[in-house]
Length: 284
Image (cartoon, rainbow, N blue to C red; front, side, top):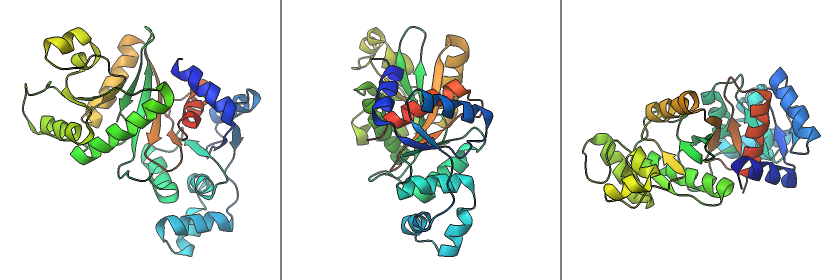
């Protein structure tokens, strides 16, 4: 089943409570009306701070009460605290707030999932020929080391499993197997060895079985591409949009205890509806 169909089906079944800290933005308001009308979610505005929200921040970070109350004066932190306190199931933000702020609020208030030390992001790339591929990390980690790259790969595999039902992960490099050397290749190799995923491997070998066979690797069917740096990932997804007509859903954040979506600044109301459905689908 296509990713969006799966996401919409799960969203209708779960009818999650999703908080939108930028709900006054016209695009967000339109998206919320659609989500409610089509039974995809129960959109929420950031609520007035409660003692439960204060306690959630104190519990998450051990911060002083006065600092927690100051943080809750900001809509983004109030929204994240609602998720932490159980008053909302997920948070969708980013049309006004930059990525680093969304990650900061989610990290402080919601916290990372067990076993995860690196929050990351991914796009679901929908290609005109019907292919659906997860690209990560294209929005958060600038130059991940081997441990961080391994974290990104594991989280992306879990996201693919939730959305697509399977994960074939390839850690990309300019080198396939042992054909090349360099610091970036060794970083990818170390991450691949730590996770058991395929890599280092070039993009064509990751996607084309014939090329993979010629290069002596068992690849060609990846549906999750892990890029070695933010430069590579961000450039790749934008080129796919402009040259191949791909639709990029996201960026979706991953690695947190509860689902969080970081929207693109240019997201339309339609984009926000789709991103919200995907975010709900990622909930375990």
